Length: 165
Image (spheres, rainbow, N blue to C red):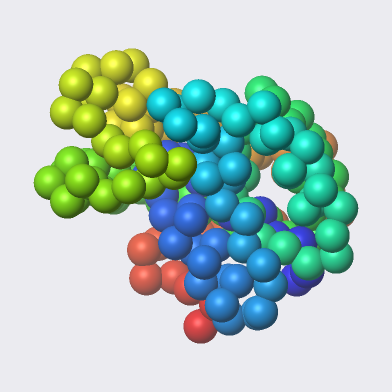
């Protein structure tokens, strides 16, 4: 495993798993949300160039996101995809818990951005996005895996499963 993507729906734990893989195997982790979001939650103009730059490296781990901007770029370069295909009930519990924590703690996320209470009512808020896009994300991972048969796919279906232990 030299170039690893961690796939799964919003709230599945992609970033947490990517950090664990990074620490366990000593490879750099590129957090896709941090690369994507500029101040005010606006897409950074350098996003695609930054991703292309790290993707050209020999070793990395990143979350599988932002296909509408990146297409197959990361899947083409990855040698391994860890797919967090967890039950919807677990994913939703995680994303709700994470949102509450971020609202209460006022945790800064990326480039000064914080979750705001008023954002809960937006259709692209992580809670609504996780719910509405859950099955679509599963289909997308399957489609990308079919298009890239040379990529090793590790499918994780239980919370207790570990690919780094």
